[in-house]
Image (cartoon, rainbow, N blue to C red; front, top):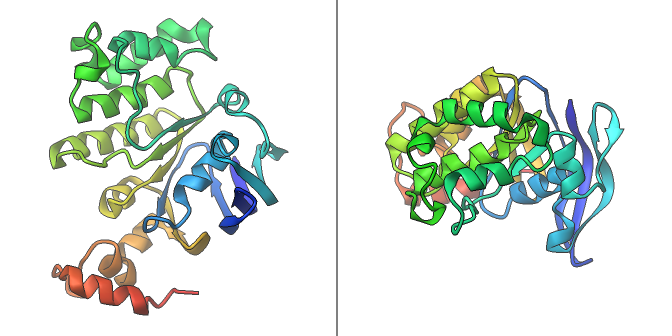
Length: 261
């Protein structure tokens, strides 16, 4: 179990980004994390993957534990060695390297399993097999996202942290990414899925959390969140009868959310 308990994170000794966040990611589950820009979702991922120090962030209170052992202040390399891999927003592939070279880089903490993990990635992403000798910079956005996820899988992680994997992708590609995430979880990898596309996230997640201004303000099974009128109106843009509301209505609704603390 990867767990966060009452976590507070500060940037530059000034900006309080997380305000007592608690959540759990079981080994065999997909957990969705919803929230508007600036809610603290990416900060939470950095805390889980050991990347806070790169951004001048620091844990002031609370803890991150893996199977009951504190890992809150470990480096990104140490966290990767413990099976926690973070796929950053925006893909971040090595554009001057080929697809297969990118994948081999991802195996830096699991060299002995490189061949088996490469087979797994190519089975999940047949498109990458066709492109394995092509420079990553020439891939489409969807192909780069597949490569970024595949590179993270090359270390055989227990937990995969995904930051906006559907961002900027066509609906057909989003559906492919959604199905692949579900299959990765089915193969035994726990997933924390940060997504603006709430429908996609809640369709495949087992549990969901909603964050606002550095706090968790809602915590329910994903199916309940998907059916909740507040979530449907604010995050899915749907009214009580399922009709799509206007952007103006959604903006107004933001000032009257019933879960607001």
